[in-house]
Length: 219
Image 1 (cartoon, helix red, strand yellow):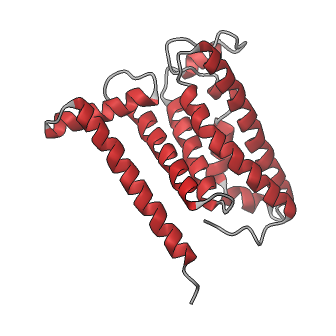
Image 2 (image 1 turned 60 degrees about the vertical axis):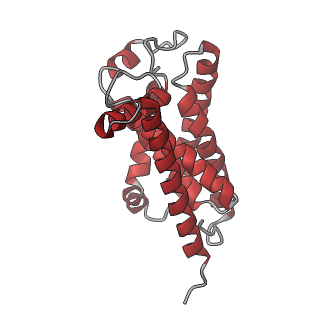
């Protein structure tokens, strides 16, 4: 985990806010695939709030930077993810229906034709993982837990792009499990459990090794 000693008070506050937003984004992205209408409304409202915070963060950090163009070029991936994660994208329902309360019904319908929405969600979760890794405000065990949740969510969303038609990250994990089961001749459920176990083990080992390396004294 990174130290925040070299940041200004404003940047430290933004970092703390970004950490909260990043941790909230993991369940929000998952619930946005829910078929529960009430949960879906709350998740999409929360998604808009999270997006507004990250947009505000980019605007403030760009304003604070002495060389604004250089800062934007150095953070172009994060900026692209924030811009691509606009409320229009957040209002896309992964099921058959778009949130009927949205006044922008036509645009999400058009965007659903492509797979861009899922790729944007993968980028969003990857961004949250990066924020969590850089933070020094959470304990190591909580970091491992959050990173495992983020990795499984990314794998689940990616699984929605392959195999059978999928409406949620859970269905995506089932797709990966089925593909693995067909490849090695295992039951589909066992294949899914194996995918989850490998992802959790690999993520935990990588995070723990990186933390141990960061804790070693320099020199």
